[in-house]
Length: 246
Image (cartoon, rainbow, N blue to C red; front, side, top):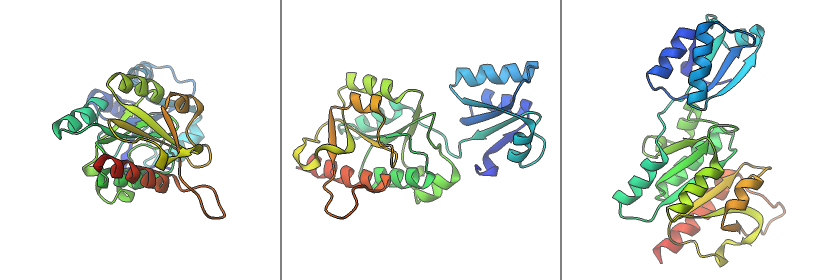
């Protein structure tokens, strides 16, 4: 269940939210409803690449905090998103080579919040997350970030792989984390760089991994062979910081 204070109920309310430029993360619509307002919501959702789940009335009743959903419920981001261009412009303003986190399929809000916090304290210029199969900027994420969400640019994109291709054209290269890669200490992690972190268990998706220039492994000396996603992000990020300062 999402945070109720960021739930929008009712067809007209959702249409107005789109028109006001609000960042809507996800829609739940009554399956089979085809009236004019519902068609408008669907068009706006397609225009803004918002995920739609078509569900029955019982499910909508369960999701509705106020019981006045009219067949439509939207979840709105707790914080406004930046754009990829905003992140690049921030790096340029600071006179630094871009350093960006890209997160693939991170669904745990505590992990996302912790990674945003790490990105901020290590001097990264921003974080990029996908619109689908990933958590958005909820209040739980904000709390887990310990306030870093207020100072860190977070962009949301439709296709992470395509975004990597576009950033490569701007001079960035990419390293992703995976236990089957080369030891991170043997890699040259200087320059304009994107650090790609995947979800725990599944890791970075195959298509995204194929677009990365390097695959970095964190040395493991204990009895288990994996780290929490946010911890892995922190370890690799600070190896990048170390190398950029040499």
